[in-house]
Length: 106
Length: 318
Image (cartoon, rainbow over all chains, first blue to last red):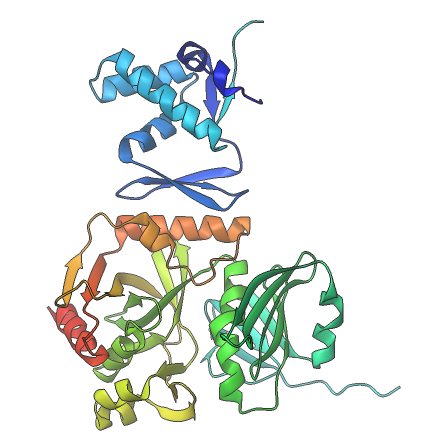
C-alpha cells in the first residue's frame, strides 16, 4: 500500500505486518546480508543485526512481535529495539524492500 | 528453388553450455551427461543481423577509441535479444533466453573472431541460462578449481599459465562460469585458448611457454591453444588479485569475512539484469562467502606477473 512517510509513526509501524515483496530476495553473506531488488537490479547491504531484523520482520506476524523476539535474542531493552526496528523499517519501505500491511481499524 | 546445403554441426562444451555450432570451436568435447543448458550457434550473412535493429534498441555498451572508432558495441532489443559487434570480430545476436546465437563472422583467421565469441557472446548466453560468469582465470588442482579473479592487467592469465605448466589442469583464461549445485559450486571450463602478453610469456621461460600450447595468433597479446579440462569441478578457492601502488610488498591473506560487494562485482556481465541471472549470481556469491576459502592477493605495481604466479604457487603448495 502507498505510504506517506510522515504517517509512519513508531506506534503505527509496530502494529503493522511487514512483508518482503516478491521482487525482493536476500541472501546471508558472512559479513552482511545482501538484499536484491529484482525490479531495479540494485543490491543493498545490511549489517548482521539489520539482516536478522529483516529476516524476523518477514517471519513474524507484526513488527512489534519481531521487536519482542529481537529484544529477547539480543537481551536488549524492548523500547530501544522497537526504535531501531522502526528506523530500519522506514529505510526499507523507502527503498521498496519491504511492504507494510496495516491491521488497524479505520 | 535451390535448397541450402545443410551445414555440419560441431558439438562442444564451454562455460557450462552444450554448444551445437555450424563453425568449429576450440572447446572441450560435449560431455555425455545430460542436464546442461544448450545453445546453438549458426553463422549467418551479416545482413540478417542488421535490419530489425534499427529501432527499439537500447545501447548497453558503446566502447570507442579516443578518436571515436568503435571497439565494441552491445545493444538490447526488447524482442530480438542482444546484439554484440566489434570491428574485425564480427556481429552476433544472442536470443533473450541465451539458447540461440547467430553470428556473422568476418573473413579473418578464426582465432581472431573467436575472441569476441569467448569474451562476450558465449558468456552472455551462459548468464542468460542461469550460470554466473565471473572475471577470473582458473586451473584445476587435486580435482578442485582454483579461481583467480581480477580486472585486466593484474596477472590472472599468467597465474593460470604458470600453474598449468607446473601440472595443474587448465580451466579457463578470462571468464569462469560458475553454477550452484547440490554439492557446492561447480566451475565449468572455458575455451581452449589463453591470451598472454608476450613479455609475460617470455618471463615464464622458453620451456614453459612451449609446453603450454601452440601459438595460434598474435595481436596485442599472444594467443595460445591450451586443452581445457573436459568437465566441471567444484570451486575449491577463490583468489582476488589487486594490483595497486599503495601496496609495498606482495601479500596473500585469507579473508574470513569477504566483502559481498567484491564478490558480487566480479561478474563478467554486469549489464545482464534478468531475474534468473540476478538470482543465480546472488546465490552463488553468497555460497562463495560462506563456504569457499577466499584469499586477497595484494600486488605492488612493480611486481612482474610471473613473480605473482610464483608466490601464489608457493601459497597453494603450503
